[in-house]
Length: 337
Ligand code: ADP
Ligand code: MG
Image (cartoon, rainbow, N blue to C red; front, side, top):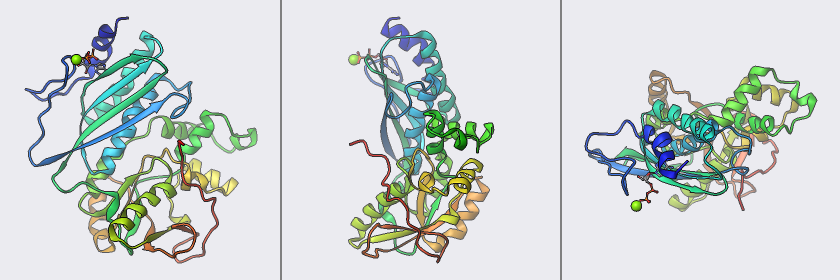
C-alpha cells in the first residue's frame, strides 16, 4: 500500500473532532486555534518495539499505550487534552496490523475527545512517537517543583500492576508463582501494562490544590525523587519524603504478590503505573478530598514531604505512618542508559 493510501485509509478517520476553521491531516501542517486565556502544554513520548513494549504486543495495545503515556503526561501537568500528532516507523505496511493499530488510537482518542491532526510515516524498525498537545488556564499548570516540607504525598490509584503485568507478558514467573493468581488477576495486570488509563480527570481535579505533581512512569521512588529534586532546587533547601507501606493502594493481584512474596519492589519501583503522584498542603486536603469524591476521582495519602535527613536515600520507606524504617532495594526506576 502507498504511503498516502495508508494515511487516508487508517489515519484520516482519526482526525475528528476538529473545530470549524481548523485544519488537520492533509496539508503541509495542521492549523489549530488556541482557546482564549490558556497556555499550550506539549508532551512527546516514543515507544520502541522490544524496549518499551514486548515485541509480540498487539498493534491495538501499542497504539493505545503510545497515546496513553502522552495523555498521562498531560494529566500530570493539569492540562485538558487538545489534539495529537503521530510519527510512525513500520517495517512493512500490513493492512490488518494497521487496522488494529488505528483501532487502538480510535478507542482512546474517542474517550478523551481529541483528534489526530498530523504526523509522519516512514519505513524501518517499529517505533511510534506521539506528541500530544493540551490546554491549561494561564499560570495554573501543575509542576514538579512546588512541594514543601509538611505536604502530604498522594497517589491516584493502585501501584505495581504494570510491573506485575510485565512479568506475565514476558513469562518470567515460576510455575508456583504463576499459580498464586487467578485468570482475572492476570488479565487485570496485563491490562494495566498494555492499556493504562491516563488520569486526566484527576489532573484537572488536583490542579489548584496540589503543590506539585508527576505521573508515575518510572516507579514511585524514582518519580517522587524527581519531585524532591525539582522542589529542593526551587526552595534552595534539601527536601526528603517518607512513604508508608501500609498506605499504598494495591490491587487484589498486587496484594496477593505481597502476601506471598513480601517483595515491595513492584509497587515502589517497577514503573509503568501511569497514576499521578502529587503533594498537597494539609490545609488543602479536606477541600480537595471533597472535590475528588464529587468527581469520582480516587486519592490515597501515602506519605509526607520532610526536610532532608542528610542520610542515604531522599525517600525513606516506613512500615506505617510514624512507624519504623524498612529496608528496600534502592531501585531508582527504569533507566535507558
Ligand atoms: P510532507 O511530505 O508535507 O511532510 P507527508 O507526506 O509526510 O507530508 O504527510 C501528508 C499528510 O499526512 C500530512 O498532513 C501529515 O501530517 C499526514 N500524516 C503523515 N503521516 C501521518 C501519521 N502517521 N499520522 C497522522 N497523520 C500523518
Ligand atoms: Mg510538506
